[in-house]
Structures are given as structure tokens and as C-alpha cells.
Length: 450
Ligand code: NDP
Image (cartoon, rainbow, N blue to C red; front, side, top):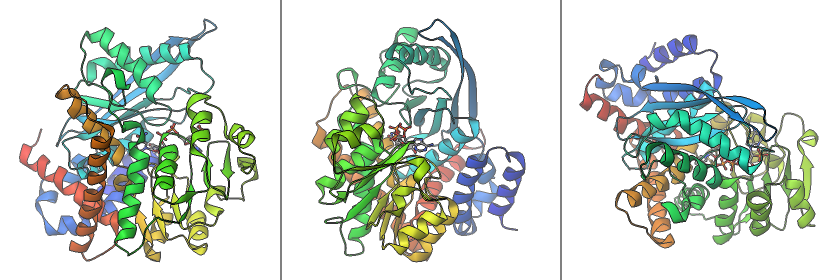
């Protein structure tokens, strides 16, 4: 049995109750064997056993009082997965589905993604099963303060630097930052995604969505193609999806769908990003509101989706951008996309495609950009925010966006060249995994058994 299979089997037995974590590990380990064969030092140093176990998991009680005066109880976590190449870095997710296994999947992915950015940041992730939906501003503030009362002692500008993720945007980061400052009396770049007037970076809000489009452009350029004139299916209607749509329009493509947890919008004329921002960022409303404001848009609730499929992936498109959440695109969806002539899939969300959907994309030979490469622009720009905070400077939008663009070009090159080195040209899953892994594994060996 191969080394990678043996480690995976052991993990599967130990963590059978963490399916998302095992799925993320399986996706990575199933591609690493050629790199492990090439360098026996990885097995000798038990790198796989060490890199699949978080260095530390902090699990804490979050107690707060809602607007009715009732005490509410949530669970909070921070998974500090790997610090071989830099301080832990990764977002916080507030969503009822959050548990340790989900955060371990996200933290594990983050190790390789952060390595791929070429910047010195380790992997981490955190969050809570708190549901921000329907909560007042004051409730959000009190929850964020209660969360930080527990978290503040474990993070710091050179220790662990959280950012946003699902359910954590600029508003939540602002409240979390204020609470950290009050508890520590320290004004430091301990969180990224901050407001522009207190240390935030221009282009951080846009970075993940823009970066995913830059990555798709690179994949297509290598195939003598471009996004210009392409019809694009986008899922999600949050931070990543909104700015993915915005950049697609800027480069001459046409996003025709967006979705949230309740339904999908389809408009063959293209998504109106300004109205989408108004609905989602300002009003924090459902997409039914978008359909009210844009008469050409058709709204379909989840209950009316074709059985076993996501409506977004049934729409005929040239390129697909899953930007909502994990496992939102299954094998049936992948087959439908391919049958409809989709030539490019770039993942803005983390682990949006199931493993058999990924295999279908790889077998078809289309341009497939896996999440840890295609959505790395968000964390890369968070690192640029850390750089600006450390030097007490603020760069222009164009400077940050230019650096982001270069980082995405380099991530693509690195993944594509690594795939070529291992004889599987075009397989960016293997390329990204091995390129991300080697840097971290070599640093772990150099630093000894800690
Ligand atoms: P947001 O909270 O801003 O938006 C999430 C969107 O996805 C919403 O439209 C939400 O719908 C939808 N969604 C969430 N959960 C589900 C679900 N279970 N079923 C259907 N739809 C769902 O989050 P982001 O845009 O920040 O994150 C989206 C994805 O991108 C996540 O996978 C995240 O990990 C990943 N990502 C984010 C980065 C960032 O910088 N923000 C960086 C890299 C990756 P609704 O509003 O109805 O809940």
C-alpha cells in the first residue's frame, strides 16, 4: 500500500465523523504520491502524518444576550493548522453548519493555498455555529464581542491573523477588531478585511472574486482562448460571487446567474452588479428582492430545482464559477455542464465540487481551476493588508489590484509547471497540490520535529 493511502486509511478510521475534512484530505493525498516517491525524505520525516493533524484546535463557549434579553449559547473554534511558513492565516465562518470537521477541512486547504500565494503565511481557519441571518446590528456586535473575549489570547499580528468567510464581512470584522483592541489595548493588524479608515486595504473586498476571474483568464490564455464574449454561470450571491460577476463584466464576459441558499436568479441579459450589491450588501435581502428590481430576471426557489441538481449548473454556459459553498456541484451537475459545452470551471468557493465531479472535469480535459489555486486571491490580498499594516502605509487600489493580478498569474504558472514536471500537463489539481505541499513540507523538515 502506498504511503499516502496508508495515512489516509488511518485518518479515515480516526475521523470518520468529519466527512468534509476527510474529503479535503483525500483530494490532496490522492495527488501527492509522485512527489512522495521523488523525495523519500517526506515519508522518513512523517510529513503526511504531521501535516494532516492541526497543530492546535481551540474550542470555546460563546455566550451573549439577544435583543429580547435571552441568553444565547454558541460554539466557537479556531483551528491553527500549520505554521511552517508563517503565522496562521485564514478566515472566520459564522454559519449554523460550522463544526470542527468543517473548519478542519477549510484549515487544511488553507495550508496549501497560502503556500501557493508565494507569501509567508501558514494555514488556519475558525468560526462559529452562530447564524447571522435575521440578527440585528446590536446582536451581531454583541456576538462578535463575546467571540473575541475568548479568541483574543490566541491571535496576534505575527501569531494568527483571521479574516472573513461565509457570514463574516466588513461589519463583523469591524466589531471583532474593536473588541480585540479594547481587550488588548493594542492597535495592530490582527485581522484582515478591516474598514479602509482603520487599516483595511483597498481591493481586499474585491480580491477573491477578481482573483478567480484572473485565474480563469490565465487558464484560457494558455489554450488560445479568452473570457471575452463568454456566457458565465455563477453560483452564490455573497462577497466572492458579487466581485466575480463584476470582474467578468469588466473583461467582456456575461454572468447570467447568481444564487443564494433559497434560490437562483437567471437573466439571459446578464446580472446587474449594482443592483445585486444593493440587495445583498446594503439591504441584506433575499434574491427575490433582486427579481423585484430587475424585471427580466427569473427567480426559481430551491424547492423547484431539478432533482439532484443545482439549477445554476443546468443553464447553458461557456464557463462556470461556483462561488457559494462546499459540495454545491456534484457529478450530475458536472455532466450537465460538460454536455452543455462548458469549457472552463474556476472555483471561487472552497471545495465546491465533489470528488467525482472534479474527476469528470479532469477526464474531459476542460480548463479546471481548483479552489486552492483559483480563489487564493482573497488570502493573498489579506497578506498585502498585513504588509501595509506592518509598514504603516496604504497603497492605491491599482497597486493592490496589480499585485493581486501578478500573484494569480504566478499561482497559475506554478501549478501548470508542476503538473508538467510530473507528466500530467493541464492537471492543475495535482500541480497546485504538489506545488503547495513541497514548500510547506521542506520548511517542516528544515525546522525539525517540534
Ligand atoms: P458570503 O457569506 O458573503 O456569501 C455566501 C453565499 O453563498 C451566499 O449567497 C449564501 O447564501 C450562499 N450559501 C452559503 N451557504 C450555502 C449553502 N449551504 N447552500 C446554498 N448557498 C449557500 O460568503 P463568501 O462569498 O465570502 O464565501 C463564499 C465561498 O467562498 C465560501 O466557500 C468561502 O469559504 C469561499 N472563500 C471566501 C473568501 C473570501 O475572501 N470571502 C476567500 C476564499 C474562499 P445565503 O445568503 O442565502 O446564506
